[in-house]
Image (cartoon, rainbow, N blue to C red; front, side, top):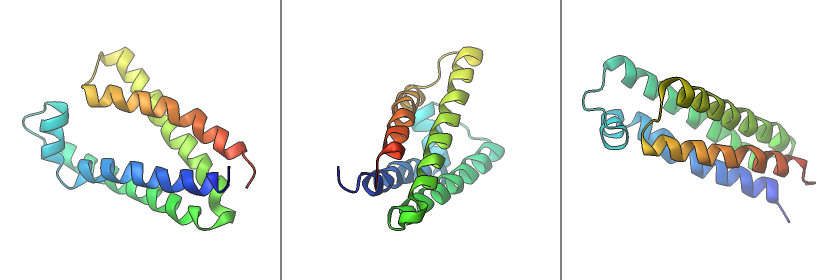
Length: 126
């Protein structure tokens, strides 16, 4: 599989950007449409916009790393840590708080898949 690390990092960038933008550009729309929250508190909007920039920052690092071989493995480790941390937090919340909105269940599934896939890609030769 030629250039699998590069392709996976590009995929990760394009996967995280729409989610980030949905969180931060229109947090009211995101909260209402996908989470069923009618009125979004300013503090939650603030958190969503900060999360947007965190996601965009990581996504840009992954894209940069796709084209800079010396950064590919560290970038793959950040994907493992990023998605692994998110899924652990979501599973804790699922247990502590109950079932969230369907979009968040989808995120759990995607993150559960991405952690081992990213680990597998990390172990691949260049």
